[in-house]
Image 1 (tube, rainbow, N blue to C red):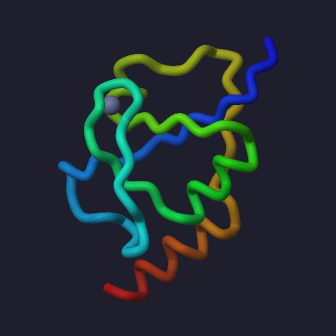
Image 2 (spheres, rainbow, N blue to C red; image 1 turned 90 degrees about the vertical axis):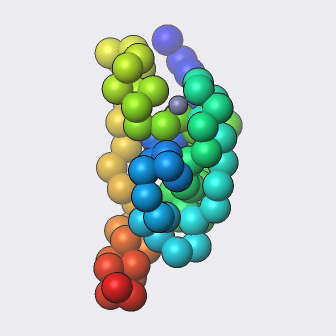
Length: 88
Ligand SMILES: [Zn+2]
């Protein structure tokens, strides 16, 4: 089944501060809670298609179909996380 939607799995803001300082708030499409989205994550997801944001608890409670393709972190996302670590 062809499906060009990208689901970006995000950390709820209620669980703690943004993992990356430049992250902005979006809304989980499943439960409506606020989630953190980093600029590089958004860029990576947009390369795959229209982006839907879902929080980690929602994805764990209702995982995507088995045929879902998972993408590793992009080089930009890795750089962003490493930079955030050095800021601490
Ligand atoms: Zn949710």
